[in-house]
Length: 284
Ligand SMILES: NCc1[nH]cc(CCC(=O)O)c1CC(=O)O
Image (cartoon, rainbow, N blue to C red):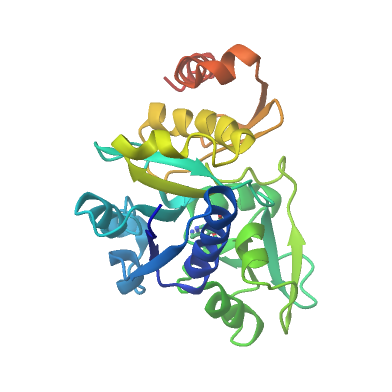
């Protein structure tokens, strides 16, 4: 097989994720890869509020374009940033084994209970407000290290919330001036696909990757993404779903946090499972 061109964003986290996929493809397929680094709209607009502008596909659209035009063979994404409905003609080739899916509360050293949190994510804001009644929120943008500096050095807020997987992939186990406190799945339900690196390809080539990626992650993420698609919301609605083993953790602003046991049949038919579960919760 010839070299595969792998499209990735240029952020440090995206590059770390692309290297993991490149290494995996080398081991699994014996194929070498070449990185095509792309600056996406989301990267250029660091000062925008994602909620105000609508975050859908901001980090993924340009990578998908490279696949369509044949400039890249695969695109690497944080599954969390992938819109629920995939562009026609593209498919998920698969996922790397999911890393720690939890969110981590990052607080300035010494802060016991944060009174201000810097996060723009409605999912994190609403769930944090239940953990810390009365907490106030501010926006925060930028790469993970910028965010950590804003809390530890600049004190723009008492804390923020970050994905454990992102911190781990950047090799950040500690940071000056802050403490990391991982939140349990039942305290802060992770975003759909959080911790899973997704590999996208042209639909016509998906079969070639059938046995290359992680089936357990695919099975879990299929249910999470089916729920997201059925609700029709992008990544910036206050909705969260995470499947760990046979348990679905769900958060919706109308229902709060819920857990649902999943059957083998649910995993075999994620779309039917999603609509049944959402109907039972009164969300459809
Ligand atoms: N919102 C940006 C984003 N997209 C994916 C991750 C982390 C890595 C992952 O979830 O796989 C992050 C950073 C964060 O939310 O802390």
